[in-house]
Image 1 (cartoon, rainbow, N blue to C red):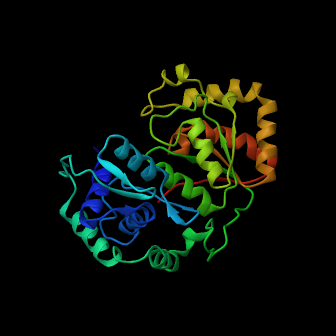
Image 2: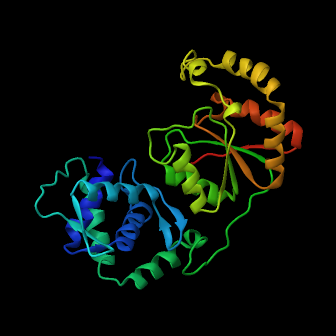
Image 3: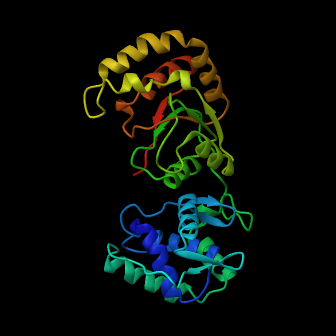
Length: 288
């Protein structure tokens, strides 16, 4: 079990009562954003959603804990620990555990409305998609040839990068958009983007096929692979490049692939072609 999942169990344990889903979500958000530990390495990221900050990954994992009976539903919207199972919480640092106890102590007695009021007032950037109250407006980026890679980033952080930047369309340029990590498989990725009103387009023909990638180790020199991509793929996919250029000219759009470093990804060569057609500058997005 991952440490971040153990944190969910610890929160339910220290609450000592059935916990509503909106409570657990906001407690985790506060652990991430209002504690020195930030929940430890690889804790959940968050996006602005219908009632403020939300983590698609956290929701998916608490549902998994429920399906394996570590967590049981209490009513329609409450969770609690299964009293018949033992829990191994080794690996969660004492610092994180202290922060969990503090958050439960400070916020565990608040009503949902008071908890939301606190989160909204102290983190207004996460209200841009809220059905309850929007305290700030959603950004809209200037037209540019944006690129981004999700390597080493959780799905919610990646999605929030687009919301925070003002991206309105994702152009997936992976040849084979399959990923083991939650959220990055084509269908799931498109669905989550849709929840945030971000359009999804896929151009498999502008990617590099897996059998070609395997010839060039990711930690080695890939210049020959990118030169080949530029000389063959980009030369023969003129129509697709023109279509992508039209999309980029319509609304703020980002070319997405896996590699975090744009110089180690074919999307940089594609971005150069799109920039030449549109006259727009290239902007590589990343999470600090």
